Length: 253
Image (cartoon, rainbow, N blue to C red; front, top):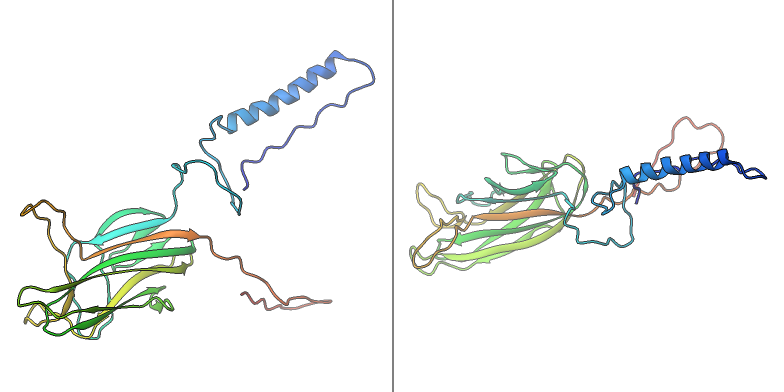
């Protein structure tokens, strides 16, 4: 952990005999050094400026630490068409640090790192048959994150106007480079249509209610992304040269 760097001053060399001037110079040098430490390092360690923290144990309650994250939700019902990959929409930013929520449903990371997304999507099925929904993650404008897809099966509706529901919940750990965008997608084999009306699957947002009891609204989508770890350090392998080398190819793993 690299904190603010202090360099001890050169101390005067003592002579063989006592000299008042020597001790005056020594005290002056030490006073300047300790004044520098006192002015830059709060007694309570309220703030530590660190270039890097690797390993070890962090002590303290951590209440002053901020980490890259974003949390958002959507207050509208969301629709798609049959067998069509559709981006999950987000219209409400709940919290963010070093992330930007974009109008196209993506989120942009300021810093690269290993992140974890957690989502809860409220799917409703208005059809008489059961239907499947797949949800997965994409980064950098269309690159599907391997092994990020989850399948959810919605039972058939109970009756007309009495839909079946599945809260699609999952977590995915993935990697982002600085400035990359991340988005969540979904698709179903049978999509509900508003007009002309057709039964199927959609993501439903439900308004708050005071009857028969008070409850908050239920968004169609709730999600958050939190920082897990820094990006792994690239390893340079198998590169050496003897004599003059015009160009060298470096591979990273």
